[in-house]
Length: 146
Image 1 (cartoon, rainbow, N blue to C red):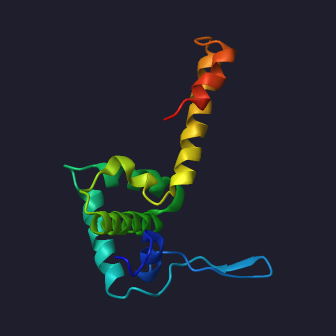
Image 2: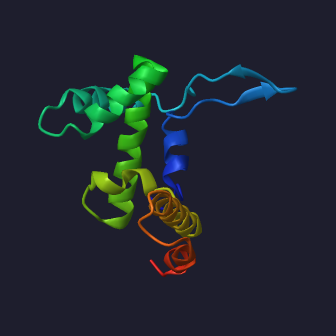
C-alpha cells in the first residue's frame, strides 16, 4: 500500500473519483474516471452487497442518506469508495475494521486537532446558550488538552 501514499490516490487509481475537466470556469464533466476496469466493478458489487446487509447496517444507513441527495448510482460509487478507503487503511495499518472512525481516516493530524477544537467551541457555545455554564468558563474548556 506504500505505492499509493494515501487512500485518495488509491481511489483515483481504482477509478472511483470524479474526473476534473474544466476550462475557463466551466465544468465539462463530473463523471467518474475510466480507470480501474477490473477493480471498480468488483467494488460496486461489494457495495451493493454491503448496502443490502441486514446484520451490519452501517453502509445501508450511509447509502440511504446519500440516495436522497445524489441518486442511486452516485451513492453506490460513494459506498464503493468508502469500502476501498477502509481496505487501504486496514492493509496499511493492520487494524481491524471499525466503522466509528471511518469519516476521519483521511484527516491529517493537524486538521483533526482543528476539528476537535471546533467541536469543543461549538459544545461550549451550546452550554452557554442553555445557561449551564458561565461564559467566562468557555476559555478554560476550549483550551483544555484533548
